[in-house]
Image 1: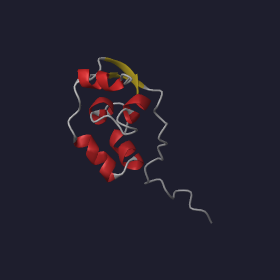
Image 2 (image 1 turned 90 degrees about the vertical axis):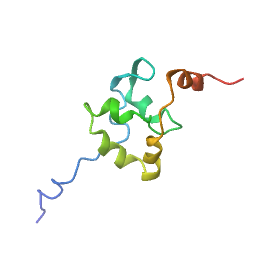
Image 3 (image 1 turned 120 degrees about the vertical axis):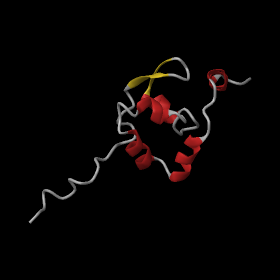
Image 4 (image 1 turned 180 degrees about the vertical axis):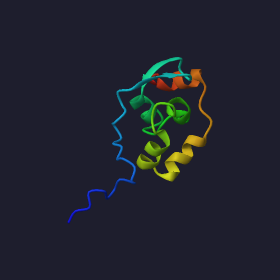
Length: 94
């Protein structure tokens, strides 16, 4: 007989794209951005301040732990770039 209660204590599976369409205010750039941008801005890694921006709206710690390795998450501990450096980094180089 199947145990229908099995797995109820496990956290729900969070697909990496699950929250991509949500938008939030970016204090670094000064305007609204999608969660997709926040999770990929740093060479396909999350922004260093992603936790600060999304903790009230998403289970952000659970999401990050499920989709990124401990080494990748350690990179989030680096200080965030300033607004000007972030913008300059987005410009195409010639």
